[in-house]
Image (tube, rainbow, N blue to C red; front, side, top):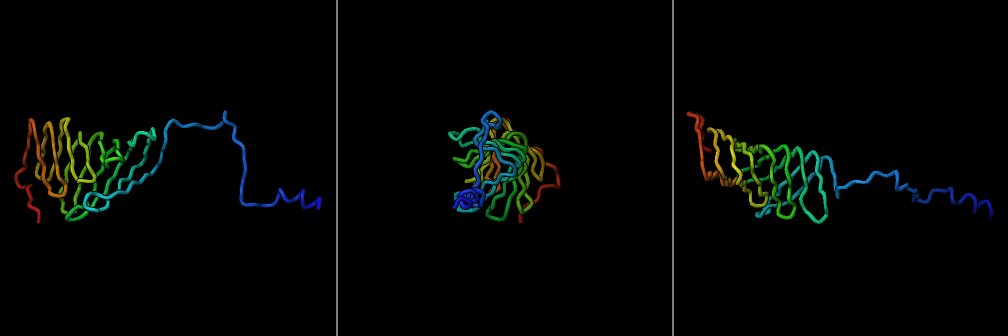
Length: 176
């Protein structure tokens, strides 16, 4: 009986106990920090979208905003997939909106592409808005304006306030 009592604590029981020294453990100020983060959602027409980031940091549980770097978003549009990419920005999980810092590149399956800066992307409604001055390129030329509203599904771009559009002859191509 004495041998069983001495040897039983040494046998494996499926659990491991350990002690941490609170003075030697690293503590983070962020609620969440992830490398290679993926967020999946659906738009207002039940089509899937995915947001992938190289790094993602959420500073507080009370604020649903995640700071992201090296962002790629994939979404399904009415005529095929589209890919959006940006160097970084803030993604608000409560309304599925991404506020980009720097340039955002949009490329659709039908060859439509656009580069714009100073924009917010509404993933649920497939809308891009910019209110702080935007500039960009499309296959047929370049544009700039104080504001932009672009509907990715309908392929419409509305420029407002000091709008400038420079068309390159021979580059305008009608979608098939």
